[in-house]
Length: 484
Ligand code: NAP
Ligand code: MG
Image (cartoon, rainbow, N blue to C red):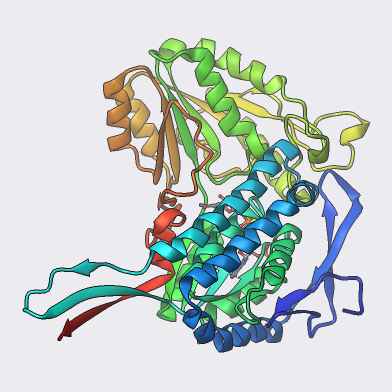
């Protein structure tokens, strides 16, 4: 490519957009540093991606599944060879610390190995036929062409957990990465290319969500749409995909609670809530943002979590501090606005509450770990996704009240309880409205081989992602009756 901008990857070639336009990406810890320029693609570029996928998909489906698996395994190896480079790329573009970025890159590697193996295991089931001399079985076939739309907050893990099962199952794809963090996803496509994914099977097109995203979601030749991002965009994408009779999965935001009961060790509760809230700068869909605390331990918990927040050292992700910056100025502004809302609503600011002071923080999108107490369940800071390191402490008088408050939001992604009471733990698992429930663990952190998804406004509640559930999304079953 002639210009210095990074390309789209369409039909096996790195290409420039028709538009001739590019957009610039900067380091959120140091916005003077330009990370790269990316294609500001047009509808025509997006259509070219879908056309390449449509042409390549039947051939890819005919490749024996274990051979597809070998290519995924080779991709994993290439990611592994570049692990440190990818870790730094991720940290520089998205802002998370190296200690947070490294396991995310490892997650992408593990995902490719996992689905490489699944190609050998996943085909269908044999059942007993009612007739004599007959077979009855199912085969799983690829859905066809999938549009994959991903957010910036896990910019390699989420592309990986959509791409690997889609490709394992014999689909072709077009991925539209988030504009705020496309570089590490671009490098993933370099690995796919070098690993020998045939031309056209995996396409990568950067540009505006409302143009490129819309185009691929609505394209007649796209059979399935897998979206992860905000509830606002996700519900719109859901409507256009279902209007077009496409298979859709949409995983969206959260307002995740951790309930702290008096039987729990308070120090352990503080660690669980602190890690869940302030990890990855609170920019996780599963981040804890509500501590629902029994009044018997509320004071001890409050002083513990304030201490925890005040002891986090904030700094550039690449220096591996306790917490990195927000990904962008608009995300920083969003968090600062919610902090103002909390103050206006009458919550008590206990820790943080603004940008950290000092020369080293002057330009980057840094914010302080922030804690509010005295939050009531009807306040906006207790109901809306903030997507930053802001915790609301809500006091309750009983287990029943805790569950009621936990469930009294539009979202239902992840929820946890800290308790030593076996019965309470099990009742929480039964009664809480969430797709992921944890006992004595933080709300964040997922294993790759079990289903993931939310309920209520957090999810389309159609298909789960990850584990074998992901293979269900990317395949459709055919039932075969065979008399012989
Ligand atoms: P977002 O603003 O909804 O964007 C997500 C993706 O959709 C981006 O690639 C975006 O492109 C694209 N997009 C925007 N408008 C579109 C349209 N009209 N049609 C099709 N695509 C469109 O989300 P985000 O800010 O990147 O990510 C943060 C959100 O993701 C949070 O709400 C978080 O909770 C959620 N999330 C959920 C999960 C989960 O698994 N449940 C995981 C991670 C994050 P541009 O970047 O070009 O705008
Ligand atoms: Mg957004």
